[in-house]
Length: 174
Image (cartoon, rainbow, N blue to C red; front, side):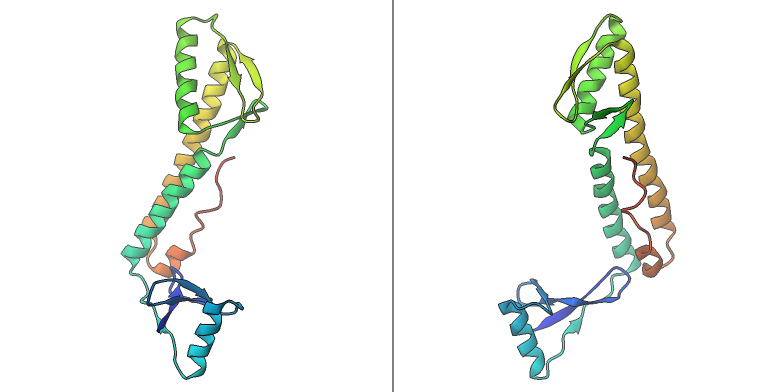
């Protein structure tokens, strides 16, 4: 049995978890689990874990960009509030909202019972549909704009330490 240390994107060792090389499992170093106890027993007979190689800047950048895309999608589809109305912003809702706006543009007297994020319904007339659609669209675009800013920062990071300092969790619209 052998273990490897786990590094963060900046190459700093994570002291509370190791990887069991046989199966890739993460093992906490300070827990009272059988895996943790086996690791500490392994250490007690003079073994030392092998550090994992620090990812290259390209590898770290690729992982960070993938994580950023996922984070933007979560922000985009988390919902928003427009004119005091709590609205879903998932792709299905965006599509249905677009269809309702088209119907409203074709017939300005069109109205629809719209289901809000809390499950209640509200009658949306032409003006409300337009306002809500613009608000949802602004939310979605804000998410993409924030992602674009972070992509620029990620692309400009000169090394993995600078890359790891970029907080992809902060600053998302709500």
